[in-house]
Image 1 (cartoon, helix red, strand yellow):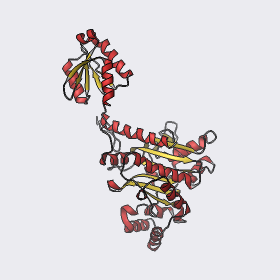
Image 2 (cartoon, rainbow, N blue to C red; image 1 turned 90 degrees about the vertical axis):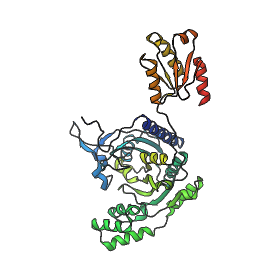
Image 3 (cartoon, one colour; image 1 turned 180 degrees about the vertical axis):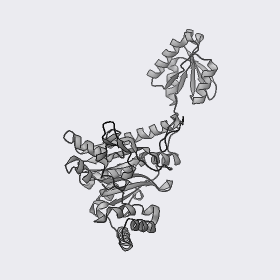
Image 4 (cartoon, rainbow, N blue to C red; image 1 turned 135 degrees about the vertical axis):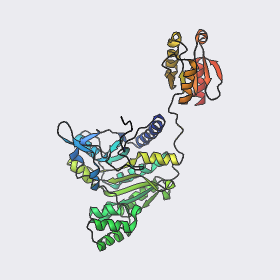
Length: 402
């Protein structure tokens, strides 16, 4: 049997999983500090809610018929399902509704570096506000996330789909790739889509000469009022976003110190909300690339050295001392220590080797002599030094060290 994960899917062993947990917890805390509430939606959705909402990337849907012969799809993104939630609960939610969501999304991508078929997406959105105040607030959150994670600089490039006027969607999608494939690449792609070369050149020239409109000027001033440095935000007329539901302000965040890596994208999408909810409620927000953000943080040395392990291993000296070891582990856990109780009374040497291989810094040894004196031996696995202490003294020692 082949035990490798499917192509485009990944296993995360404890060390990597601990790092991902760190980032997930940080992102949740930052979003909540800005007044956004958590939301979760099902992994499987009716295919019809995604159909006609995404654009040319609908070919990437993981779709199939379920046992009830219904057309379903794995969660492609989190924006569309949240609009479904708005439609379903619009009479019970409190508006403005500010939500964040951290869940996996699924796309039938061609697997390559940085692109997976299952990946964690982080969204934050504001529903119920149709003015640029909401766009500006979510863009500000976009930047503050990277500021609080310790990035020396993040750059948000801002534009508005309203500036593109009646330009066809096919042309907009091509222009969105201009930084990757250049002007000639964009023109060639437009021609393949049936757009005459002269018209394609006209579109590119038009976009490059765009100027900020009133709503974009408001957003740029909003970011300035929050105190973000001037080199953290800029108007960029070539930002187009490829989602068909994008409208109004659109933005992307990149990390200049990591090769201008794109890590976040956002837009206003009032029409999508209205399509599902039947009401002109308004919605705006972003999707943050979890893997890319973690990769950038790693590259810049911002991820902490997280030990995916316990502070202490409590050994079991013999079957007769098992209950004593259990009580020690219980007492330490109640004092908020992370404790691994070795499951059997194997030879002490084997238990110490286990702690060493897992990188557990301290081991508690409690034999009959220690039990009689109501103390334990605390062994420092790095220095190999041992000292005889009460459990309370161990708690004080670890608390002082943290």
